[in-house]
Amino acid sequence: MTNEERASEWDRLVWENLGIRSEQIPAQEYRRMYPQFILAKDSDFSNGGVVVRTVRPGSPAAQAGITTGDFIVGVDPLVAGLGPWEIASANDLRFVGAQEWAKLQSRTDNIQVDVIRDNKHYAAEIFLR
Image (cartoon, rainbow, N blue to C red; front, side, top):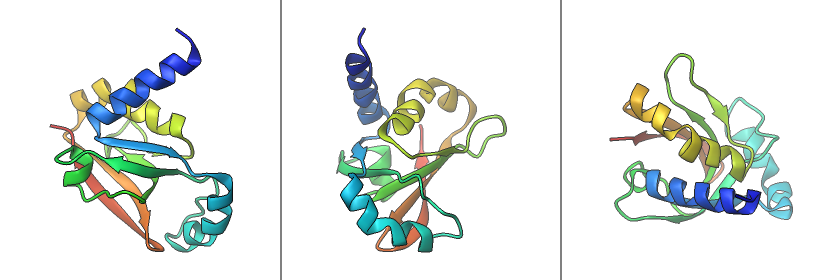
């Protein structure tokens, strides 16, 4: 399996498991948004994040209030020994939503997703079951 095919498969799993399609924040948009990442929380999200492009109606992400245009910058399973994970790229979200999914489901009922929207940081709770 090529890296491109693997990424495509992981994107499919993120869609099935979380209900979102996302992409790396484009460099130009990130430079424009950088002040938001610093001001949104007492943390420097200088590594960026991913922007949500589509949310599947009724999905765990939709039920958590995540919407198109949100920036996902972190995921915390709230379980010792797992995470938290900084989401700096699409591959980071693929790791959590595809590769680590079975482990997450076996060890916790929900995860906290760090989201930036309208210059504010908030934590969305996604239920896994």
